[in-house]
Image (tube, rainbow, N blue to C red; front, top):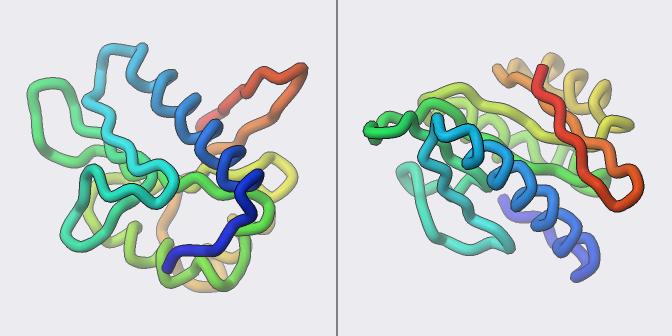
Length: 131
């Protein structure tokens, strides 16, 4: 399921996605594949998660990361989260810090296996923390 975001919200989402991808790429540990703005660059089966990570020199999916904004941490996203959590690899939800508890609650209530990361924007800098 793809939510319909306002253009400014989509730009914000894609900025978070790009920052996360750049940070992960800079570790030198992963091949990082992205699908910003609903693009279909890299897929797993019939799905196009925001970020897909494989170890260097491997095609085995290690992590799947889905970026959410405050407008998308809700029940409408549950089918997508459930799908992504079953694709192989470890599924992470990357959410605004103020929505972290809500994301966890939704996953527990709907028996979705996920790990969590959150982001904070301070002085136009995006800080991402993985739990």
